Length: 252
Image 1: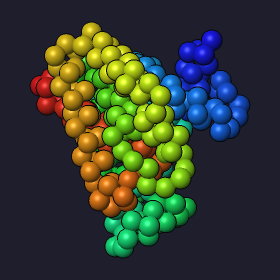
Image 2: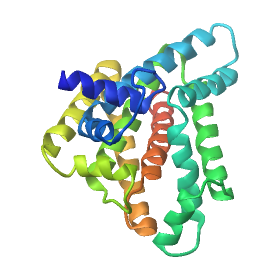
Image 3: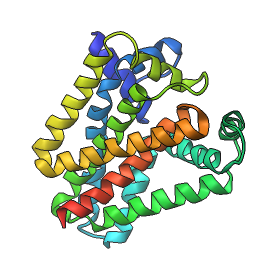
């Protein structure tokens, strides 16, 4: 039952599926402790988005399908990661101390930095999806979502908390009890599914997301002295974009 509850909490946290009505501190702690389920939810999100795209490609031009499929992903995940991407972009562009940058990230207003970064990431993702061949669209989107979700798990392990907030639950969970088992499970789930779908090509896609995660962790240590909740969202969106770019590079 503990595993099932963990899967339910992770599903509720990462998607708009209405299976849990409230999110309290105990739920967040349980979600963080079952973070190794993130790649499994990435599989679900990618499969639904890929099936949606495959169906639309029967009737619509590829570019329109790219727009609608990206919109599907953002809506199905509740725009939570997109919000983090916007705040992350704003924080990067601010000149000042890490404390000042974090203050700007918490501001509800969207600045130019966040808008431009989100525009680049979303447009690139749209174009990538529109160029993926129809016979690989489901596999490609599943792989990119698994890579994006795994990158957040690894970030929680390699990162340090820049401030108290949502990020703290996940970073604490991946630094304390049984963190080695959790990271191994996340890697194992990701590898098995992605290799089954795409073989060695899938591993290349997975590695691209992991590398992106390490690069972003380094950037965040420099700018914010650690990781915030917004950084997790930004990592998901940017890792997905890089993984989609990798799909194009390895399947052409």
